[in-house]
Length: 462
Image (cartoon, rainbow, N blue to C red; front, side, top):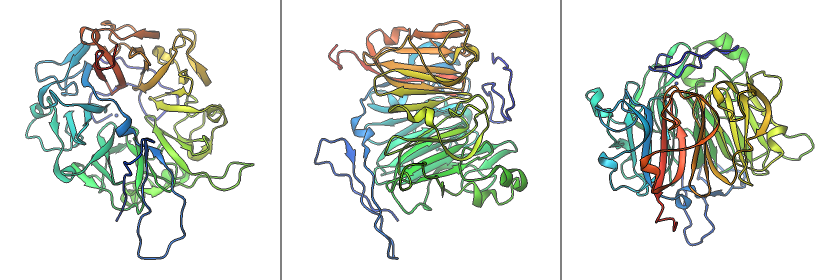
């Protein structure tokens, strides 16, 4: 049921994948105020260090609403979390099992798996585990069809954020530690996670970063992080430039040589100064598309690196970037959020308006059938008062302040709730019995499925 798509000068297929062969720190949380800011203390080192300015970021975990998990789309590897008998859903279905009665803060769709974060800081996963993406041991495929807790090194850890890619997951703890599990892949196949070629079936703690991490994001096969000193670290596959620290020449000449040291160890990204501004920028936000990365400074300036073949980085020449570049077209507004798919990007501004840029095939830009490409952020006039956005490879989503969710893009995998395989070129409202008495909090796209977090409308006072 997968539609094969045309490609353009890209070393990756746009076909949603059916298999993986294709997608010492010390800190304290000051809870005495209602500012919604998470304050992290300076890390301690044996050697004297120049005092660095620390950034403050919103404590999104404490600010986030709680709800229940809903899924729809393709579920042949268990990514819907609905049991072995349900391989497909055209409308949102309630995920039960071990999540029944749990208050969920966040839900993320990976390539062929799903990961949830509860209000008691626990992580649950379900779906395909052939590359260790569930973070827990499974004796057979059937054990991935229902949600189970991720333990191991996460036991006793207060997780406050999660991210997921094609075959990996990341978790951020309250004290600024990052845990990873699963595997990265590149054009040669399995790249590895901690060691080259090897997957990690249970969470491992990253210990190479000496400062507290305050934000994480995942692309298909890479992870980007922000520290409390406003620095950017990346690891994973860098073939399209998404790591922002390996040159195109080095990648083409080096191949897989020393991949473990160069790619699988988190290392800092050097970001250039902006002409006319003094000092190097400090960063507080990070977002990832499938094969690109966006970082936002404390001044609101946006930099990007990675795949740009359809202008998804906001750079009109269509050339990919292997090192960070300042993006003027993205820096003209103040953005609440950025979300990227395979060949398109979405941006949500402070006024609740949504802009799209990149490839328009199959309707993913939401701008109508006549717009097959946009080389600058273009407003979707049909959407207003939006508070959350999300993207899958070829689909897009938005949630407004009233808890209504909208979808547009490729309909092949039933990710849009229309119940049909037709593409939607402009936003349509989410439909389904499970949403009649619920408000949507967040929505996102996996490789072939859609995930939602929703709460009872009575809880919201409606």
